[in-house]
Image (cartoon, rainbow, N blue to C red; front, side, top):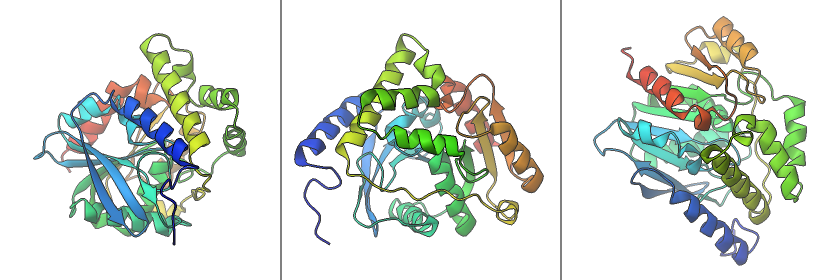
Length: 300
């Protein structure tokens, strides 16, 4: 398949504009990092690596519409004790370049498996995945439990409860190429950030800039709709897992999700962070990082 040099962007100018903005955001990454590139059958994947070389590996998967840079507030505490590998998901925003469409859950499972192999992660790897990335992670864990040691799912959309139609409508309206539409969506998604001031408000404004720029400059792509896993699938999940979510999350009805997991998958540990929603990775970065590390360090 012939792909233009600017792929997956709309034009060469779009590519240059997005990459300049990405570099500006990457400059705020609080710890030393190096980029690694992995060629897979779905395209080239970029990962940002931080932390001691000899530390246990910890892979981070972002939510939809985000990149590895969404972990900027959490990578500091996590990388003190882990070799953090923050991924730009394939077929999404960031530096990864997809050359073949991912059309179903099995494609994401295959891409993740190729990524782990390409990174030299033979097994016993820890995985933390947010939102849409959480759905990807649990699909992979069901097929390749031997690859993972422990897994943390941060508000995984779709996998526990079906996506609410209200969220889908809001997300579609956010794609209207008008900045105020996207900003309203982000304010609904992350109200704590939108109402903040000082450094918190600056992070929100940067997220709006990044998200709206991405919508403008990347070619349109149709994401795979995350499926709700069956009771039997959750019951046979063999990887020790932590479900972590903010109490007021507007995307995922957290109390209902936690109740379902306690009922059908009692082996999954659930923790709810009070006073925060889908933006907990910024507003409660220290708290969330501490919870994750406690779970990862727990004696089996």
